[in-house]
Amino acid sequence: MLKYREYVVCCCVFFLILTIYAVNILIVMQKIKKETMKEDSIKRNSYIMAIFNKKKRIIEFKQVKKDAKRGDAQAQTKLGHALLNKDREKSLYWFKKAAHQGDPEAQYCLGAMFRDGKVVPQNYAEAVEWFTKAAEGGHRWGSYHLAVLYENGIGVPQNFAKAEEWYRKAAEQGNSYAKDALLRIGRLKPNN
Image 1 (cartoon, rainbow, N blue to C red):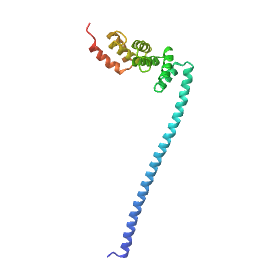
Image 2: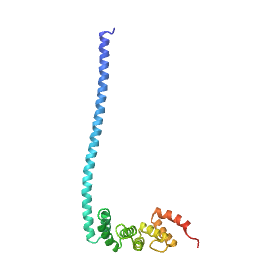
Image 3: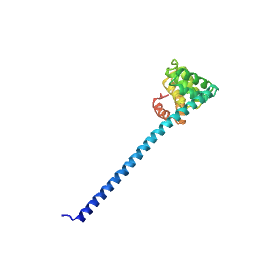
Image 4: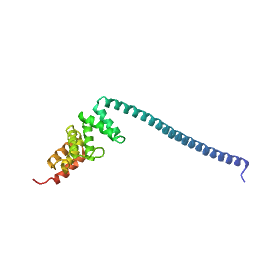
């Protein structure tokens, strides 16, 4: 049998191990609590930032609308984009105002609207006109879509040379689709 002294030592060792285990559990629980508080704080901060960003966007929208009404073509184009999914008629109105002032992005958007026929009746000749203006203004997507129309003879007589010219301009402006099209059109071009 264990002597009283050995029994006391065993009990002390057991309680020491138990205390160490309990302290470790408390440390882990504190870490979990801190992580939970951190996550809650992040969620709370994200919510606050979302409200702040919404207010900021409202203020920016009001400023863009104010600038658009004053005749700023870039603001008119931004307003056209902002209204595109909400009010297509107003979007069309602002794109037209900006396009008539020579804004290439607005000209491109009008070309797309006439090509697609969702906001205005489909009119490929109008699409070609607006894509041409956008392309001449250096718009890479205007150049690309104008080339597509020339390649397929939509709204204009089919003309591979013009399609290649506009694809080349779009590719020079960094349009990767135009680069692919140049490879394709090289194989499609009739041998003359």
